[in-house]
Structure formats: C-alpha cells, structure tokens
Image (cartoon, rainbow, N blue to C red; front, side, top):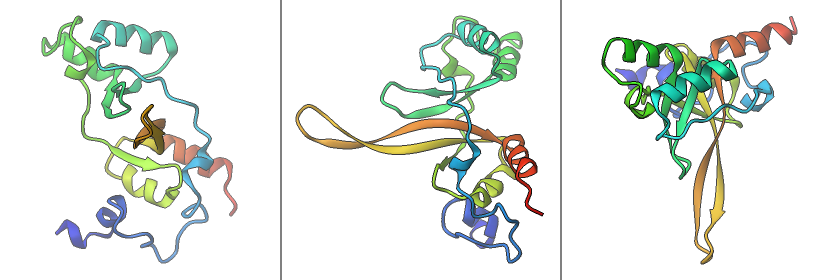
Length: 165
C-alpha cells in the first residue's frame, strides 16, 4: 500500500525524514537552489503563441497559472508540438488543452530531501509560496505564487557545485 511507502509519505507531507544516513544536502531548504523566476503563461494563451514564447525565451516548459493565482498545470514545448502535429490540438487552441495537470508542488521552506523524493517519480516540481492577500473590504485570502520550476538537473547541479565530501 502507498500508505506504507516512506517515499510516498514524504512526498505527500506525512513524514519528514526517512533516510537513516542522509546526504549532507538532505535538510537544506529548496530556496537555497537560487532558481530564476519562471516564465508563466495565462490559460488563454494559444498553443501557437506558447510555442513562439517558449522558443523565443529559450524555455522548454512553463507553468500555466490563472489570474487568480491557481496553478493549472505545466505546458512543455515538446508536448505542445506533439499534440498539434498529431491533430489532438490546433495551433489556435488554448494551452489548457495540452497541459500536464498532474504535478507536484513544493514550498520554498521544504527540504531538498522532500524534493528528491518527488523527483524520483516526477520530471519536475513547481515551487510555490503562499501569501495572504487582502481585498478592499478587508477580507483576506491565501494566494499561491509560483516561484519556480525545479528539475532533477537543478538538484544535481546544486549538489555537485556544493559537494562537501
């Protein structure tokens, strides 16, 4: 059962530490990765425009975020091109037709150990931070902001550059 799987428990926030012999970087916070701010697409961006933007800016993926701040998923250059070429989407369709809507989120304060567990199954994780916002009438709500997209290569680069062994 997945409830007895320690890696699943860590990924879903039910366990903090599982490895007895943790590497030196295990408890370092995700914010130490110093990733650059991501390129974010709104859901109404067309597949054609998404391809153009990603190619022009040199990205192969970008989060799709509603104006409310809700993260809808991730659009990738390869998936968008494949979907259009296969006829599953049109260039004029919104990117929401070709997004990956199953993804993991991780906070800036979470550990690289938790990130490592997520990246064992997922190609990327979206780094989010929750922030309280207030309306004009004084009511408040929590809004998630996307701070970055992190891949196994980002983690590996950090570990190899800062290896303390």
